[in-house]
Image (tube, rainbow, N blue to C red; front, side, top):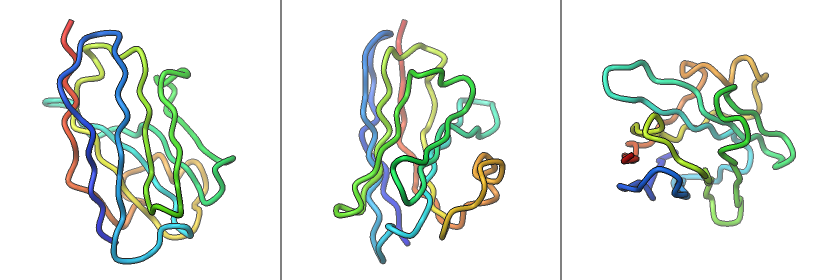
Length: 126
């Protein structure tokens, strides 16, 4: 599975962005998809994940309803909608994939995922 993340850019605080992650090589309908981010000089952190069924998604505690993950299996694409962006949301955002549907605790760990995209930079100015 190859993953291509896009949609990042420079925005102002309070703006919204939608990131996309296009998968190729095989269908992702039987994969769980995750989003992680890495700010400068910080460790990569979990943001959100969505399982095969769109009714099963999980978020990092800091998201607090600010972000929403979704997927379109027909388009082999997963999305991350980010609202009310803050300067502290500035990071490179990565999408990742893992076959089947690991438990929630495992989905929060980057080591769980087998495939990674190259990342897309989101910069939020104050």
